[in-house]
Image (cartoon, rainbow, N blue to C red):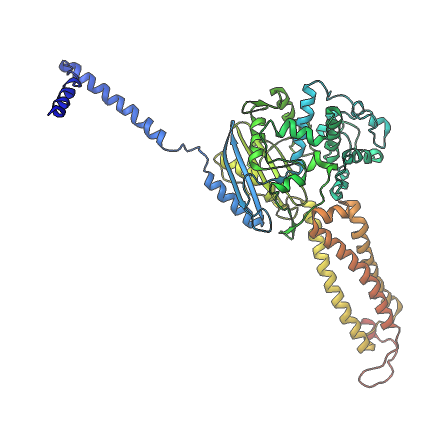
Length: 545
């Protein structure tokens, strides 16, 4: 009973007195309630359903996986940031031959994406008053010089940052074949430039080469009083909480560094490329997709990540600012970053990297405040290589509510044309060898079909000799002069490189062997196989044969 009484008492105490309203006021109140419900309902419905402009990350994942399958990419990881947050991380495929899955924490070699870190290091030292961007390199490295001693005094830090020093592109290739991990490797790398002839007057034109950023790395090392690697680790990786980022392969392997692959006629071939401290500032820093999203957030947010700032807002703007046009292309280089548009016309700030066995790309889309990073343990310079380079643009398009653009082929027209030409000639070589063998057997079995006149014999023997030897010399000597050093082609585009070597070698060998075989067959007098009679001297039919 006591419980029932208490319940009744509590009920009485919580009753709210009724409010009495006049009829016209009741109608007014009812109208206000209806109006409020009409206003509230759409807002509630809008909050519960996703906006039309929200990106569909599942669709983007599917797009990445489709491209991976068609391009035969073994493993890939990517990240998307928006404003100051990581909004998506995706990882697919295998990190190594054991089948270990790629994760957002898996380290990949950054290739030329490394250049933006070196530019950031230089800008940090500049803001500390330790480096003047317009001072000559010789202020910080007094012994630095190229073949032209006068020009050497005019090359500035800014020239190196903007790739306007005049150093030629082919100065990039030597470190690609090096495994030098000595303490003075970077200094020795810069010293090798002492006999290099500049391709342009200092500051006059853009020419991209890793050498510019390797020199910058040495400047960081000398000004900071510590190794380039330790500076980057302390002043960039650590502040940005990049715990899966490294400056050497030994440490990266302990953390699960992905195994690289290069293209062999569009299919991945495992390849452990040379790795050297000589080009760490330009090509060999290592990071993960997760860590790189921290880096992109700092780039999008005036140098700040979380509570840490690695550069002033003005410094970030200076790095991204277009400084020089890249030839006749509508692309402008800044300091470790490019200003360009995607294939669908979206203006972006970007830099990618292409080593022989890894690909990396990072993109900032300032208008929408998006950032994208893509890392793959595969690289391709062949006919469909452009689709790999276009992946980030495809992601940006989808973030902007557009379909991924069609990628024009080939992406590297000179290399593609060279591969097509060598492949066609290689097929013709094989057919020519078969035809010559059949012809010599016929001449031996049917002496009356041999050419009797000297000028005819000379044509039948001399023309193939000249064409074979000429092609062989062009492939083995001329090709490296016109395009790229043969050693670099074998490293970066092995399918083309080996086609060049095999085609050139076969042409030289067969050209000489064919001439010897033809001489041995033609010098014999021979007899008719059917009658054993002596073969008459030249007739009209035999000449025509």
